[in-house]
Structure formats: structure tokens, C-alpha cells
Image 1 (spheres, rainbow, N blue to C red):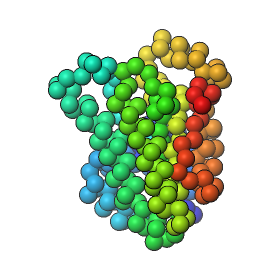
Image 2 (spheres, rainbow, N blue to C red; image 1 turned 90 degrees about the vertical axis):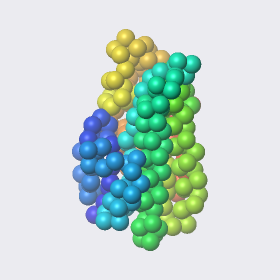
Image 3 (tube, one colour; image 1 turned 60 degrees about the horizontal axis):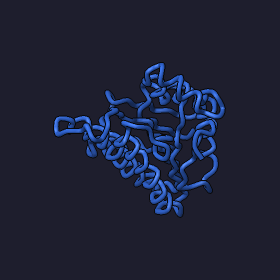
Length: 215
């Protein structure tokens, strides 16, 4: 049975997905289990837990207009960069050695529609997700000869997770802009993850699942 390690799995979409992949050996991790911003901690974890498949849902967002950012906001700025960018780098660089040794690996990073269709006040978060999309392309290129793929899923607005952190009035406005006129379902996200796991020739891409809101 293949081992799947899911980061950001104690809440939101990560938690829902961890309950769907029942045919795999799942390790679900949240911020209380491991601090992904700490390279030593993440690296030590993977030395003791080799993984066939790694999925990273972990993410942090704080909304604020860029022109209103001040030195007093350095903590929320750094946290977004530390979790969304450095955390992903720590996870990927630490899981790759055993994957390369085993000649098998699937890495799936959760990006966002905001990387290419940003909304006001999300500049740092959107930029972080754009980094992941570019990062995955190079990781896929570097490791394809070892039967390892690395891809991102550019999530639109789904029935769970950060969608419900958006104020209801704004959420209703967003819903009207989605051509499908609905939120994405957890089953559709599960299908996408399984597609990446089972299709290694797909490598280094950013797959958009967003109901047609962005192409």
C-alpha cells in the first residue's frame, strides 16, 4: 500500500481529502504535529517516514492592501512567506531523497486561482501561490528521470476550506462570477489528486480546477 503524507490535513480541504483516500496508508499532519517552516524538523520527519506521495495543503493568508502595509505588519508578511513558500520548499527538498532512492514519487502542491486571477488585498498570498506554480515546474524537470512528478492544483473556490473564511456577502458575489454557478466539490478535488497520482507522464503542470472562472 502506497504511503501518502498530507500536510495541512487537520482542517478544511486537507482534512476532507485525508478521509477520501482510504485505499492508501495516510499520515495526516497539521501545524500542531509539525512546523513546516522549520527545515530541521521537516527533514528529520522524512528521514523517519519515507513517502510515496506528498500533498501539501498548508497555507496562510492575511488580507491587506499593499499600500497599507507597514513595518508593523512584518509578522503577518513573514508568516505568509514562511508557510506558503519556505514551508513548501522544506517539504519538497526533504521528501525527494527517499523518493529518488526508491525511483518513485508524486508531489502535489495546492496552489490557488489567485495566482493568475488575483483579487484586491491578496498580493502576498497570490504571489506565494504563483511561486509554487513555477517551483513545481522545475522540480518536475529535475526529477522526471526518477519516476517522480511534481504538479500544482490551482484551486478555485471549493465547498470547504478558505472559501468559508470569506465574508458571506463577498462569497455570494464570487459565486455569481463562477460560470458553473457553484463551488467545487471534494469529490472533484479527490479525482484530480488521483489523476496526478496515476498519471506520471503529467509532470510540472499547474492544473486549474475552478468552474471556468479562469483559463
